[in-house]
Image (cartoon, rainbow, N blue to C red; front, side, top):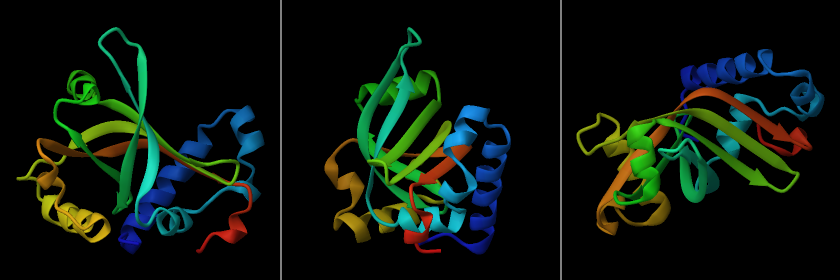
Length: 167
């Protein structure tokens, strides 16, 4: 878990604000006894997690694809080939979403906008080092790779049994 206490608090505020805006159907599913705290989310998302990553193409049609993600300082961080369709979609419209699912056991959903992490970005060195510690390689060694993270506007986390998650 790489999150500071301030980042955990910020993440909890985001989760709480999302639930404050939730409709009754969502709240019927995300009952208080099925919610994960920010601390539980950050602990659970340590290491590689696979997400369904969604963008919108130029015609406004949704597109979703699988991606590996790392959760670093309360944000999903991903890399992909610079020529990927998702990159073109994000350059035209930075709105995106990601969801990590494990059957009915857990779901973590985030909506927001892309934040590009270029080699000159102040967080690039830590992201690359974290990537290297997880995957054993520098992400840029994979070719023409772009790195990005989701700057979240909403986030929620569900667990069928939150007591099974570290806090």
